Length: 609
Image 1 (tube, rainbow, N blue to C red):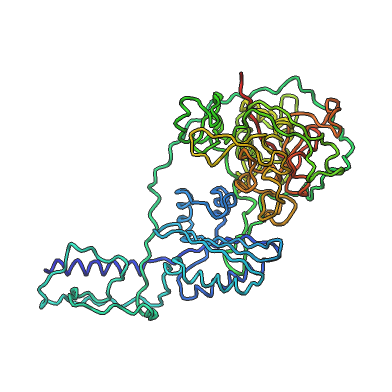
Image 2: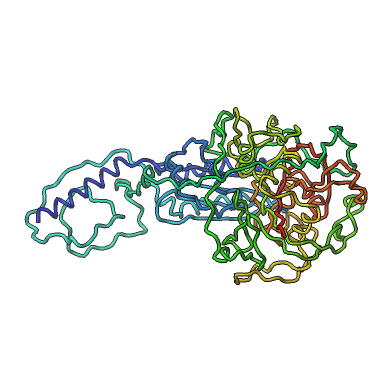
């Protein structure tokens, strides 16, 4: 009998101890907004402080979360990102209990759209999301405040306590003979009574839920995040032996003289001052902003990751379209995708068949398509192409593997001295600048792109291959198929002007990173930023916009005289391009030693016979 009371009294002491030792919840606010609406973002922070006036919270001042969110994929998958165990561990280390992620933007009709998401870094309740669209800010602010007040996030936060409750241990009542039910677990959600007494077996009236909480009542006990210090690190795989493939000695180094500029070259603003990534703001409170300090260490290149589980049919070496998979590729579990054995890059197949090549009549004009051939059907054998542009992280692995930034003829790969370049050299090693891992490599020459591709037994795409990957063939994959092999259907838009079809780049939503403001990126965007909304029929992302992409072949404004040219072809447009330059057929060219802040590349793999 006495033992039961001792247990109750012990639970009471533990509960009070947790209340006394409980730390305030760390709330990290991350809002992306156009410069014109920065005042609204600050007002949201001010409103949030008022809403949380009676809650115990802090705004952690840390710069580690911005690059983490980029690496986790927040700006690639928008509001679908799930934090990894490593990400949650970092949040807990930084004392961040909740992430409040918001995106504020305006559409073509000047309507304000607010998307909001609350992500707990520990606990059992799920993420909460909310969005609203209006021409007036007032209903948005009112709806946002209601959402916060009704959220589990708000209900989980402990209330502020000014004085700990007095602890008076009341001796157990010896007149009660009935011991407590030891088999019934205590209610973990109910705070312990201040004075320990035996359980009352009489039926009591449930409390009125509409009644406001008593300010003297101790706060609810919020589960403390689990200790992640004992987490076993993942197994690291040994990177394969890397032998740098020498450059093609048949390629002669062109003279450094710059040709006359082409009259129809698309203008790109700010070529020498590109910042890494979108204009993002970390707002820990309403009066100050912090950013990544320039002295923060960069990300050191890591070994190639462990390959994911392969598709069951991979052992039979049968691809998604029934083809024989090349030795360097593995069939991924995601339909249509393959993994390269050396760097685990994602590739997609472009099956053999005919397609339309050249200028289509719907969007092309005499001024924008003067170097394009009339549209015609061409045949292209099977090839595989990178789904995404080559990233800084991938290119940094290449540089560290070969240990140099130029080929044997002295042709520079990257312009490391330019601030727009996402990679820098430290001693004999190369590192990615903070937060730039998943952004496309820029300031890279044609020689740098070709040597990277050769290192992986790949090459650069020809213009013909690039255009087929962008526009699709006469027939294209049927992605709704649930079969182990992907079926083929007629292409409903075989002469489509853009990779996604014929819709404008910003309607009904933005599909590419270009000169317009609707895409929310001032300059570069991550390589997966528009995956799913701007993909080509073969699932290639960012073929339109973000960065121009080097091609293997030479370029001339007169296609019939391409062999006489010293220029190399570029396709796809960039973050500084007008919509007309994002077309599948649009062509341009640069000298192979050119290095611009809106010029990158992707690779193709040609199966051997």
